[in-house]
Amino acid sequence: MATKTKASEAKIAVLKGKEAEDCVLEYIKKMNRPFGAVDVSANLKGAVPKAATQKIMVALAERGDLVQKTYGKTTFFVANQANLEDMPSEKLAALEAEVKRIGEENKSLGAEVKSIGAEVAVEIERATAAVHKARAHLEPLRAGTPLISAEETAQLDAEWTKWRNEWVRRRKVFKTLWSLATDALAPQEATDLAEDLGIEYDTPEHGVLERGELCAAGSVLGKRRR
Image 1 (tube, rainbow, N blue to C red):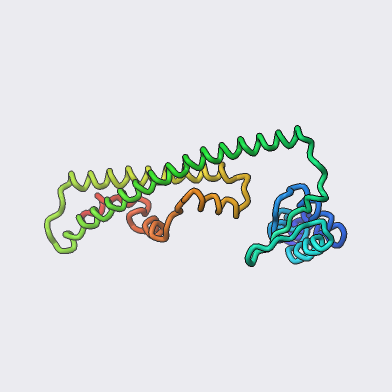
Image 2 (image 1 turned 180 degrees about the horizontal axis):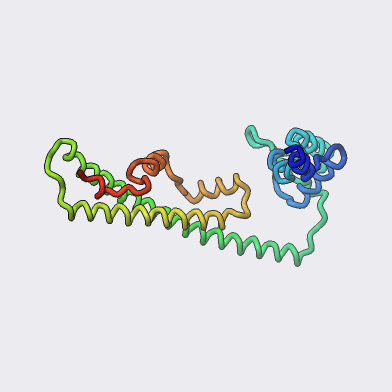
């Protein structure tokens, strides 16, 4: 056990002093986008602890290497653009073309995700209506009234299975597309994009339904008849 612990600790060397400061500055210059101290520390795999990263970034900002911006209660740091080397026009044009291409791809994927989300919402509504109908059919059992016909029960089973499987499939498609669309984005940027696209995630009610008896493994409405 002690050997494994020492091996794990040796994988990440914690930097201090000038080395830590140079590491933070080099990373922010390389990425050239706003960062908070928590994100920088996490992206450096803990090589510079969070508390030390915050102090270093503040010191770099006071020295003019970074620019500090505050939005509400959140503070971001970005490399001082005046200290960066000018980029060749050819490389700048190539980057602009790449940004435009990625923007178009994101726009296309966003529209596709939104379309799938609307379809899933409709199908969930239909499935929910089917569940309510099924429960209404089960109420007479508790009152001792005659059972519904085998044909009606079979139809309910088929409809429930069909639409729930379709919902599960489409949810998987959405998660796959969304992962591809947001793979290069920071967590906050992905959250902002979801809000801009009007994406609605599963509600607590959906979670309750998924954990309920209707979605339990091996649960079939028709088999619940007595």
